Image (cartoon, rainbow, N blue to C red; front, top):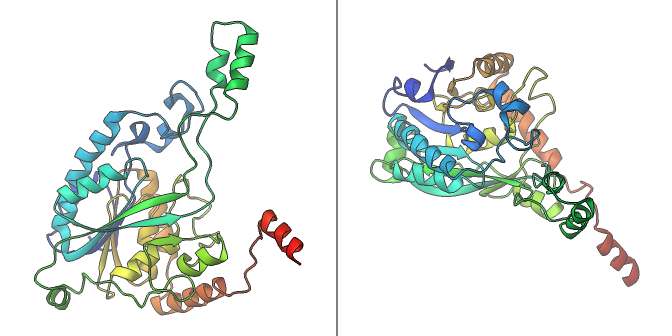
Length: 341
């Protein structure tokens, strides 16, 4: 199944993969938010008819305690299959939302993995999801003055969704056979490549950023910024992950061009494109036919050699990390500097 993108249910397709054949699993699963379960439909989720109470309510804002429980049960089964197909010592990286991360990690842990760490993908560009209660106040069967007073009283007070500026990524590992050295000599997996640097030639960290934030953060955590064209004009996927982020994890954890990278929820194929860019083998699975076609189109467009890619990536990272980058000075600090001078 290597270098194939397969349409179908992940649990069913995974059952056909042989034991101990995959080096790395890197995926962004559906989170069971607003019924976005393992069979969620992109068009249905995007439709305003799908949401409740407020017709424009974004997917994922409806709260239901059963979501987390159902997600755990389902992802435990997925994690069991992933444990089986991974080579001993193989890594499993799984994106999550902050509010369901605990369910996801417990499912992975209970399936038999070692939880090695939690990565944080840090960013600043995200839409606040908190909503005012004005639309509910307008529906109250009370006089207008009472409604006006209530709106003034609750000005700035909104529903409990803070602006989310990070995504957690679980870092799990299948138990190695013997020592780390013995396992690596047999399976060529299980160690981290610390030659892969981050920011300004820094030791790899469990925090990564794909956009410039400020000089200190970028120095320690920045990886090469995604190209504008990497997503593709034809890509309708709502949550495309940065190619550079997937490449960073693959470079950190896979040793040779024979390594197989699996994404059982490949979406528009970013993990697969990253694997192909780096000269690795890949297996992609998704239940959405539209995403399958997009992923195939994206991987077919990537025909450059790994050597060419590595050279261009290194140049791009160096350019990003030059100290000539301009950072905005906060007004307060600027004012204080003028006073001091």
